[in-house]
Every structure is written in C-alpha cells, then in structure tokens.
View 1 (cartoon, rainbow, N blue to C red):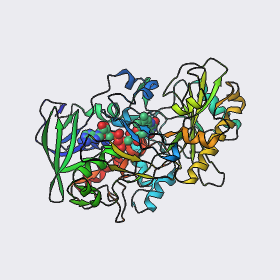
View 2 (cartoon, rainbow, N blue to C red):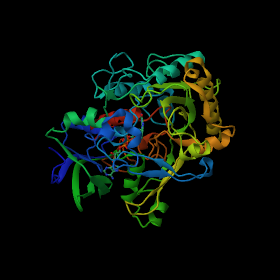
View 3 (tube, helix red, strand yellow):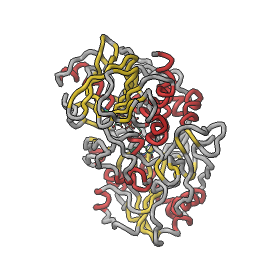
View 4 (cartoon, protein in one colour):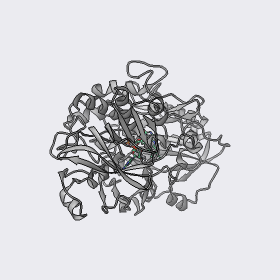
Length: 511
Ligand SMILES: Cc1cc2nc3c(=O)[nH]c(=O)nc-3n(C[C@H](O)[C@H](O)[C@H](O)COP(=O)(O)OP(=O)(O)OC[C@H]3O[C@@H](n4cnc5c(N)ncnc54)[C@H](O)[C@@H]3O)c2cc1C
C-alpha cells in the first residue's frame, strides 16, 4: 500500500518483523501470493548511501547508524576481548551490510538438520528454494536463473584473488569452476551479490520490485516491542514509531525475521522463553520455550595472517576479496571444515596489529575461518528494557577441536603464501609470530554468522517446528538465522534467504 507512510494501517493479513535476508524473502513471496503484508523494519533505507552501495566499502558500515552495535562478551579463550558483532539495522538487514558472498555450503550440512529431527530439510528438499533465490548467469541443475538475487563471479578479479587460486593449485588443491557446484572442496572465484559494480542485496533483489505493490506497507524506523497475544495466537504487534507507540492487528499472524539476536529478544519481551529467566527480569512467562537463546553459534575467523607486500597492491575490487578456498584441517575429515580468502591491506584485530607492530599500508592478508566450528554458547537478556545490551556469547574456541582446526588453518595460510604464485607478492609474514596460541586468542574474530538461538526441531527443546511455527503458539513463525539447528559450513546469507523462501511456502500452506 505504501512505502513508509506517515500513518500505518491498523490491520494487515500478516506482519513481518525485519527486512533482512529471511524477512525480505518471506515478504516478497507473501506479497506475490496476494496477502496484505506489513513489513516492520527498525532501520532506514540505506540504498542511497555510497558506503552501502559500493561493494568495496562494506567493512566500514560496522559502527555506523546501519549497525545495531552488538558485541560478544569477553572470554578467556579469546584473550578476554569483547568482539564486535555487527548486525544490519537497515532495509535489507545484515544482507545489506554484508560482504556479498553467496555460498550454500555442503549438502551434508542440510542432511544433518534432517537427521536432527528437522523433517523436510535434506539438501534435496532445500535445493528448489535455493534455486528460486538465484539469478546465476550460467544456470544449471544445481543453480537458479531469473530469481530475485543476482549472483555472479567477479567480472575483473583482483590479481591477489587470482594468485590465491593459483597458489592453492600449486599446493595440490582442486580449482573449482563454481563453489556452489557439485563439489565445494578447493579454490574458486567467489559468487557475489554484485550487479554492475554495485551491491545487490535483499533490498534491491527481493524488496525493490514490490515496494509499490498495493498489498505491501513498509514501515521504516519502526521497532516491534512485543507480540500482541489472543490466547496462544499471535494477533499483532506493539510498535515504537515516530516517538510514540502504535498497535497493529495481524489477521493471519506474525512472522519474526529480526535475526538471531533480536528475534529471541522480541519473543522474551513478549513473555516467551525460559520461564525462570523471564521471571527474574519481571517479565510475564506465558509461553515456555526452555531453550530459547541457547545454541548460539558463529564461525570464528582469524584476522589475520598479514604479509609484507613486495609489489604495489592495486586497490580493492569486488567485495575486497574475490576468491575463496575450502579445505580440510585434517585429511581424515569427510569434507572441508576450513575456509580462507585474501584481501589487499591489513585485516587484523587491534591486538594483533599492536602485538606485531603491523603497518597501515604495504601489506596483504590471508584470513582463515573455521566453517566446521563446533563451539556454541548462548544469548540472554540483561534487562527487560528493549534498549539494554544483550549478553551474547558464541563460545568461540571453547571446543578444543576448533582450536586445533584453526591452528592448522593458520599453518596452511602460511604455506599458501610460500607457493610461487603468492611468493611473487610477498617477502614474508609479519603475523603470526612464533607464539601461535596467543596469536589465535588475539586474532579470533567473527565471520558474522550468528545463528541457532531459536532452533527448529521436533524435540521438547526446539523453539520452532520443522515448518517454522513457534512451538506452543498459533499463527507465529520464525524466518531468520535463529532457526538454524546446526551452523552450516558456509556464509549464512544464502541459507537464511533459502529459509525465508521456505517459510513463505509453509505459511501459505499452513495458515
Ligand atoms: C558485516 C557482515 C558481513 C557478512 N558477510 C556475509 C557474506 O559475505 N555472505 C554471507 O552469506 N553472509 C554474510 N553475513 C551474514 C549474513 O548477512 C546474515 O547471516 C544474514 O543476513 C542474517 O539474516 P537474518 O534474516 O537472520 O537477519 P538480518 O538480515 O540481520 O535481518 C534482521 C532485520 O530485522 C530488523 N530488526 C531487528 N529487530 C527488530 C525489531 N524489534 N523491530 C523491527 N525490525 C527489527 C533488523 O534491523 C534487520 O533489518 C555477514 C553479516 C555481516 C553483519
């Protein structure tokens, strides 16, 4: 009906909270099905901002008005550092401030979800939804064409990206035509959500084509404060908007797509969650969800292995990277668990920069991450005030296997840099030094993939059913990274977009 009107309608068929990777997809499909949708987004429209649109600048968005500004709690495993964890507060959500990598991981990631009790989530069940998301130039049985999101390899890859792929080949790794093809093991040019040199995120791909649709209302700078219940049924939302509070009736229900931190917060503020924790904060306990907030997972990223450049480094292109590697930390593993990319410039935490006296220029970095991480932690409220900081802890490096794998990843990054294709670019590593354990503790950062805090399943601890309806509630669904039961071995934008597509299917069938 309108894009950010002065006055919101009192009622709609369905209210969607959050316009990010999951929310944009579910909104688009419900609008196309003819439902009257109101999309509630706490952030503004960032599309005109150059820092959002220029793919090389994404790292600068953290800490701006487009970021919620969360941080992971200090833990000894990461040298007692608080680790900032940006989340998009913007039309398009984290998908609009992300690094634009489009990556689906390994089929076994989704088969594992099904084995955990999430019926209907094997890779073969998810593939049609993945294909629906995509507009991949080459098409093919595993890829989609004509979907909302442009996905393409770099048009003119950075020479460092090409050198990384060649060095991987020199180290004996396969070189892949497509990391979203039949195998994901090896080196490849990336798949990126970039079109004509500009970001092509959820706002451009999923939302822009329907923003003028007569059955969609988008409310920007509007925060959902609580679910309005009628018995067990989600009947609407209380919203903070333009300095006041308004109520919205949702005749067919509510979809929560506020992300892995804000969806559980909104549920808890609405009286759903672990009963003892709610009553400690003086919140009504009306729906018991004992494990809401548990199982917070993220991929640790080592920032980073930094090398002195012996050639003038051309400025960044694409998303600053352009090539990826997936390989095994241990050849006995059944599939890749490590991932890495190379970027011109310094990608290092403040502590690594200080420890190694790293210069501001004349360097490049290889950044290993653990996509097969096993550590998990939790999120919790610290107060009933919606503006209070959250307690967020993904448990980085608490599972010793994660430390072992990342230490192997660091050695492999150093080995790659010594292969002829990369050795031509450097005369040596500035970081790490000899103390690898301290380096890992100080370099451990986030790959920006928090998920799992409202996991789906069939067991009593599951927060949603495998059809994404909140257990014990009617007309209430979750369509974001919270529902992921086990973190997949890839960046999470593609899996969450796929979840948004599937949520729309389930809602249209079940509502
Ligand atoms: C810096 C960064 C880089 C990343 N790089 C990549 C990458 O290259 N590739 C990749 O695959 N993944 C990447 N990711 C991760 C990926 O983008 C996220 O996993 C994904 O976008 C999460 O989608 P979501 O729908 O769960 O939540 P989000 O996309 O975060 O959407 C949640 C939305 O809900 C809104 N919201 C929250 N609370 C409320 C409320 N109470 N009321 C109204 N609105 C609310 C938020 O403002 C936000 O717009 C990156 C993430 C970040 C932050």
